[in-house]
Length: 370
Ligand SMILES: *Cc1c(COP(=O)(O)O)cnc(C)c1O
Image (cartoon, rainbow, N blue to C red; front, side, top):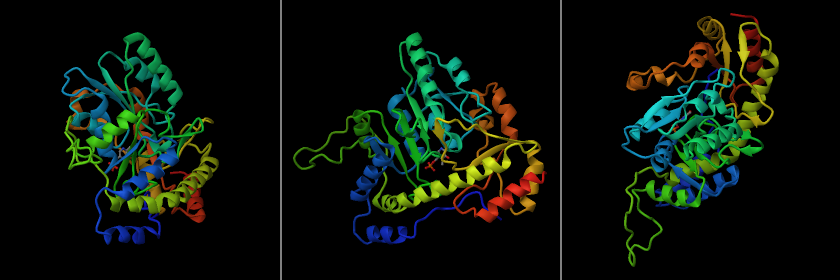
């Protein structure tokens, strides 16, 4: 079976991790700092704070910018994502206001988002689905209008878990001045085993996140002469040197991984254009996807999955729509775009492990019909 996901572990990682394991210092230390500087170099911003997962990062990002325990406060978010995106809203005791999904991109529908911004909006969560960037210029223009109308700018949190290495307007995702959250979980392009990073819009937020990921304690304070006071309580969300050393070992490796995902995606774009019963997602000239996955829209999805399965090809929609879960029933709303597209979304293997022979087999199988 050609799998949909595999762990991209560089052959250097075991040695680099073993060095840390034997060093007597496995907590948050020099490797974490080195990894943060490396990520800063990649996204082109200095304000990087690592955490132990993107889930923790999303929780912390929202915690810092949205008011808590506020009965009216709502966060606009997409239902088509990993549940981590939206459970961070619930963890912050805020309400979810679902925004419809654009069937062309599988990202949030920006027209619907513009309509739903209101004085109750505390933040906006977006996801670069599959690694295909949301139209960030258009989003900024929508927020400019909201500011003119309501007198405040809802902060934007970008869930960049799929989007390591993606670019929008020539700038890496993570570098557009919002609160951005990356995942370095096992099967993401760049893995630490588990891990995540926040890229923050200001130095002040960077310092605050650095304290809040570690109980609110300033670890750089001189504990003997001037024991640090905790002015704001925080979490245990920090990354440790073991995970950071794995991330450092995989950083260059992830460039190769990304290139292979893109090459396979370009092949499918050419080979699958115009196939009956199948529609590809949008490709705009101003952005480059990281193609963490390769979603398409197909008629008779069950038949498609069965046909692929018979040919030894694993397929899946990867993420279930979140809005139908019982846990979020109170927020249920009409989402016609998502209703139309969700039953048709399916992903085929696109990753670095897919050989030229395998991708040809995948394209041929699809072209023969289902
Ligand atoms: C993987 C993923 C997450 C969660 O990342 P963790 O690092 O495992 O917490 C969040 N959002 C999306 C869209 C993801 O794919």
